[in-house]
Image (tube, rainbow, N blue to C red):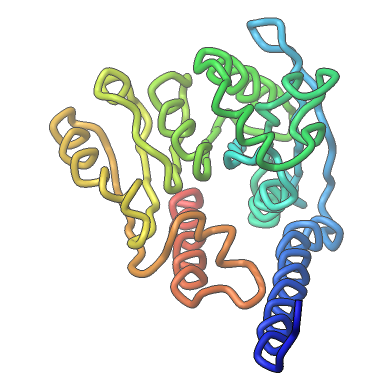
Length: 273
């Protein structure tokens, strides 16, 4: 093959893009890890049994407070319990809450491992979509029960989820017992049969440029109103899917970054009321 000046130029540009992309990917993956490494708060791993006999592994973070604190259950995205999800738990603890992030892929990976045992995030994602709904509910029941029994917590437990976890948080609002509030980030709403059972107030957070999910919001809003349920939807103009994670990354899109900041303020404002 002959290489002319134009070919060399294209090759050089492609090489630069690949190297830059790889470097950026490394930086992005380190965002959550750095927060965890720099955190002064107490982190630990916990294992507990579910009603279905499974053992769930969960990441727990404690705030630096002088009295029992409310708890927040953090449900991960469709790539499993990542450093970023664990960093979200740390951020809640920084604000005075005990936070617990269960690995809902516990015992489902190679050699009965959890999210960390999968060969790639794509493999973890594929496995997540095979989880039986009743198993996810059982895992979350066990998580809530475990954290409520912790002497460092009060009886108040809120649930927050992102992407796949946002949909699971919304579902759990119809199945969990005594949940203070549900925060569903860019996840689909459950069907009407489950919406009828929701007792907790639900707050939905959506990107304006995420029509696959956000396009469902008007119907969900109408159904929840018809059923007399508390539902408040926040739609952030220009933000895309996963704006909470993407908004923290180096060189984040301005709309994602703004949405992330505003959504954090909204969630913490509700929790601290």
